[in-house]
Each structure stands twice: as structure tokens, then as C-alpha cells.
Image (cartoon, rainbow, N blue to C red; front, top):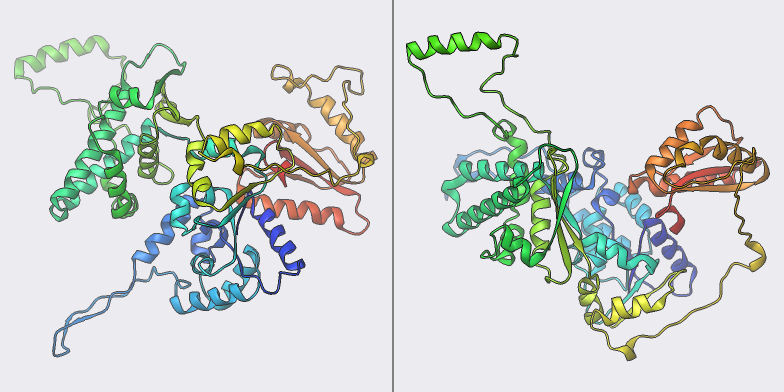
Length: 540
């Protein structure tokens, strides 16, 4: 049984419920999570960003100890030093022991991390090994729904039961997961890294690999040409053009290349990781310059005439002809973004659209792929799984799931069964009220135009609510930007209770929620207040 939910806190609740049930003692259940959640190596986990953690972990695995070479008589031919960059938790014996421990008792992510630290083993790889023998596997959304992530995690769908909790926004999650974008700076950085990497190791590549690298360089250059073509330098406005995948491939002149083969080449050779490691090792070689073309050398009389002409412009600041325009450093691995965009070009032509955004600012000049038909990416799950259960509290209209998700993914109508139960919250416990006026009888209008004039009214309302309501108070905002603005307006205001803010970093969500709940449960506590953004906390 594959149980899928949005957050690890929800999956931890599943673990608790399984332990309470009669099946808790005899059930083998394992929780899968990302390296960001499972990494116990402090030198890696401190990086915070999941992409950097993944790359650092893989780099440390590649730097394995090398044995000293000897001849047939045992004489030392070449003495090689062991790497000091190995991960001390990547020991197969310890990982195997942790795998067995995880199958003996049902544990959530936090429990397995605690066990891993005691056994000096990696919980990320131990959990993946344990999943092969588990009866229940608990996984986050992206691990199940994203095909390449699912395959990399070793998740088997054939004849298994898939349960997707909090499925009311499943269509939007699929669309967001398979949509991708890459800006001009990332493309130029990926091009330069690949070009220098090719020059450095050109003699080591096979003819086939060299051909693939040249084709990748050609495709990147064509994508850059699309972005740089017909940019209006007279305005700061971003201009957008919409293409089907088919028309974009023709416009970019890359229709005669086999994207499937090139993507397979990138995956098999792990070229993105190799280029990233190379760039970190030789950063001085990775420079993107925008040098002006050299001027032809002048004769003596030409130099004299030129000096007279230049005196007319003595007030013009001098510019170095060899001035190098350095682009900002790229966070993460831009080549991975390029591979993701190439994958988008392999989707069915009807499933998505490509938007080309053009502007003088290279950060805003980008290629964006939007998935329009999520059912296509859900097809494998519907086809291979024995049963698929989508559950949630606000699933209506059901027709959207029936037609767009299941029927659209190829499911037969007689396989689809609907079930609904009553609310578990009594009606007398619900009191919806709408406040239309503030304390000074001013109209409360939080639309886009007036939202920054409502700070004083909102402040007074929150103060009054804090006096009347004991326990928890959650304040939902439409965006992080507006939440930050309100937070600034409330500086110095005392609510008589601690105020927590939802972090933008998903990895910190659970800890903030736990702190919020603990503050409410404290003896003699009046409660706590939580500032949240609609779309994440209301699901927990």
C-alpha cells in the first residue's frame, strides 16, 4: 500500500494511526523522504537547499577511497591517498542494520533519523532498501506523482494500492510539478559550463558522447537565440509569446534532434552532476564575458587624427575595451533546469504550452512550460496500480476528478466508485461570521487596490479577537508579500500571546506548527496566533 500526502507531518499522523490499530504490531511500514529531511551529516544538511544537498551527497559518494596499486609480487606501484570527503554515514553494514531496525517497528521520519544517528547510518538509503520489503510505504506527493523521482526511489506501482490524501488540489499539484522554466542567464551559464567541460576533457570522450555534447550545445544556443531575438530595448515591459510544443520546436530549429536520446544520455552519464562538480573545482574557467570586439590597429597618422577627434568627448567617461560583463552567480545547477526543459519538449504536443518571456533584463527573459493536461502524467498510476484512492475533505465537484483525472488517464467508467461520509465536526461547533466594518465604522475592503490601506483596521481587529478568543488564532493572508507588510505594521503591538509566522521554506513548516501547538497547550496559556498564507497551513 502506497500512502501519499502533502506534508511529512500528515504522514507522521498516518504512522501514529497505524500504530494504534490492531495491525500496528505485525505491519511493516516505511516512510520515504528527501535527503533534506533524512540527511544526518551536519556538513551536508546545513546547506538547507534541497538541490545543493542532493549534489553534495552524490559528490561525496563519488569521492570514495582508492586502494594503493601493487604489482603481481606485491610491490607498490602507485600510492593513492584516500578521500577525506567521504560521508561517514554511508557505510553499507550500518545502513543494512538500520534497514532491519526500520522494519521491526513502525517509525516516522523523526524516529528513523534518531535511530540513524545512534547507528551512524544513512536513513535516506536505509529507508529505500527497507521499502522493498515493506507492506506500507508512506511517501510525499512529488515522490509518487513525478515519474523520474518515482523511478529513482524504486517505487513499484504494479498491482499495488495507491492512496492519495488531501487530493482536492491534485490536478493543480500535477500541473505545477511538471511545469518548468529556465531564464537566459541559466542557459548562458549552462552553455559556458558545458563548453569549458568539453574543451577540458575532449580527448577522453567517445565519438558518440562527443556528438551528444555538441548537440546539447547546439540546442542551448538555439534556445538563447529565441530569447534574444527581437527584444524591445525601448521599454521595460515584459513581452510574452505563446507556442505549442510543436511550433516552438520548429521556431527554435531543433526539430531534427532526438530529445529522448539526449535526455537518456544526460541521465546515464550524469553529465549535469559532473559539470557541476567540474565548475566547483575550476571556477576560474567558468566565466561568461561580453567583451567588445577588438578594434583594428591604427597607423601613426590614424592614431593622431583619432586623438584629435577624441578631444571633442573629454567629458565622456572612459570605458575599458576589455571590460568583462560578469553575470550573477547561478544558485544551484543550471544544467538540471535545462534538462527539465528538454523533458518538457518530449511531452505530447496537446498537453502543454511554451511561453517565451522577453525583456531587457536577462533574469526576466525566460522560457516557461505550462502543463495543461495533468491526466497524461497520471496515466501510469491509473494503468499499473490495482486500485487508486483519492481522498480529501473538499473533493467536490467530483466530476472534475472523474473526467479530467481518471477518464482522461484512460480509466474505465465502471472502475470509478464514489464514497462520501458526514462531517466529523458537529454543526454547533461551526460559526462562520463575516466582518464588514472596522472599529471606526470604515468599510473593510481587502482587494488589491486597497489592501495596503487596511493595516490600521486589521491591527484593531486582531487586538480585539485576541482579547476574546482563547486557544489558537490563525490569520490567513493571500501572499507572503502581504503577510510581511502586515507584520511590519504590527511591530510593537502586544497581543498577550506568542505570534508565529509561516516560513516559506517547506522543510521548516512542521517545526513551526509544533511550536504553535505547544504554545497553546502550555498550562495557564491564553493561546497563540499564527500568520499563514492560503495554500499550505490550511491543509494541515
